[in-house]
Image (cartoon, rainbow, N blue to C red):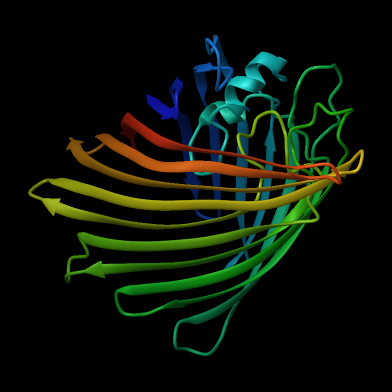
Length: 351
């Protein structure tokens, strides 16, 4: 369960996240599906009429095959979401809180089907635990029919390079990946902005103590859009822009239980411009959200673990729009606070 308040806009969602994972000596199979419901305001002004809608995220499957000692070949596929498209009112409700710094599973509604494959080639550099990886992949989304709002990526190609080091109790890694999608606007109803992105990430995992029961993890990332064609779409409150974040988490044993604290800070910023009928408009937008969470892992026997987790989110989002023409200059600004909370209960069954 999640709920957010952005300025005077309220939004909430509920979902049941279901995953099935089975492992073999040289393969891993994973299936995921999430039925969910969403309720939110459709306007920042006036009486803010609310809409409610629900459905199911794409049913996705992934098969990872270990090729040679460390290389991985991945095949994956997903159905379209149910419903496969959103009405204009539903898209407006998502857009009233639509920023990358807010975690909303309802954004998975309106996604098209997808198939793809990726390959990761890993090569050890000496005997010090250092390794180099090269990766590449291609994905294909069939073109959707109809007139409602969808998110369609068309054909996407990606490639990247990474380096990792596994030492005594500490694992370090970093990678760079570039993507490019080939799609079109679907006459204005496609919510995917087009173009591609360059993505950079860095990660660290440190094991504390000889028994390895305590863990500390740090992760950071930066994503920059490339050749964006449609930065302003209905499901977004602010235009799509640079997105970055850092997460610190840990696992601390308390008797048979484990405390799972997490702290995440996310930021998105963008600058867009357009000219129409002699008027030039520039939009500078940004949003920042911090999330603190605490979970408790409770083992109930050898095969069952229950993990409740609660978290709070706070931050702000805003935009300044400046219009310039021969006759006059006009400036509009909004800056809204972000408040949110969530509660999850994870039930894990293992053979």
